[in-house]
Image 1: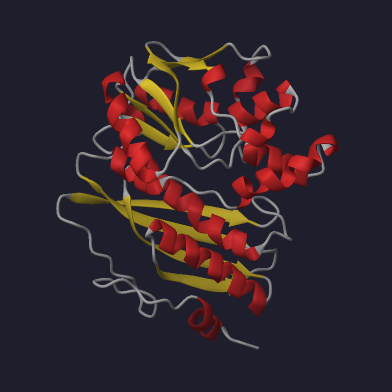
Image 2 (image 1 turned 30 degrees about the horizontal axis):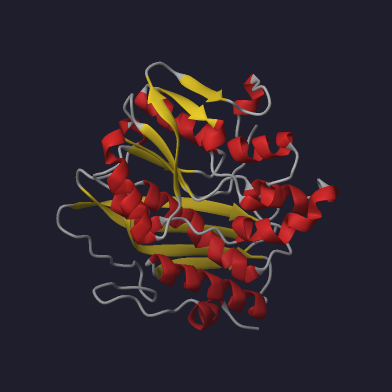
Length: 319
């Protein structure tokens, strides 16, 4: 049976970019450009909590890094590199090869190379920890606290698909299983608009990635910025496969559904033309979905169904 260092050498010892020191030493070394700060984010994925035991390991490798570079994009940071912690109950070489293939593909797609990490044995399923690092201009970070009354609220991509996919995989809504394959890719292989997020620095004010639901994540911006928000429900970009599903399911998926890993950001109305052009250059779909206002809280206008207090809550690990 292969040992720890043989497994690392076989599956994760990839060449580091020029100027970097990567896998094989006590620490990785990453250069940071003059006039920039280091942005660091980490996420933990636990079998049975964040992914199903029988998930495609290549898709899992992709998502393990995607959820981290999504955070970098939400800060306006350019990815530099990442480290991977992997805890496994046993060695499955084919599983590791597929996981590494998905992880490396996402690393190359996002420009976030693997430069180090650790492996260990787990007594209770697969546990994955990824820490990603990027650089952001000293005055260019997209902070949650920077939204201003009068700002447009923007969303990239579409909403609702991952939530519906998750519930279908849990065996719910059997009458809608025909849409599973169409929405499953949005859950298992998210494509966060990282380079677009980096390009927004200097054009947008505040930003966050949508991981726990649009309303919950937007509320983080509102609390940090001491502002309110008005959301125009008909303007929300609903995943195309959700057309024809029940209004209650769609409304919950779009407003509260997590695992989206798209951006919600705010910007002055006069920045609209530039943002639309940047989105075109980066191949990203963008929608203006509301407006930042004075006060506190979120008001959803023209939703198909009335909104109760609990309808504003997104995902919480301990709720």
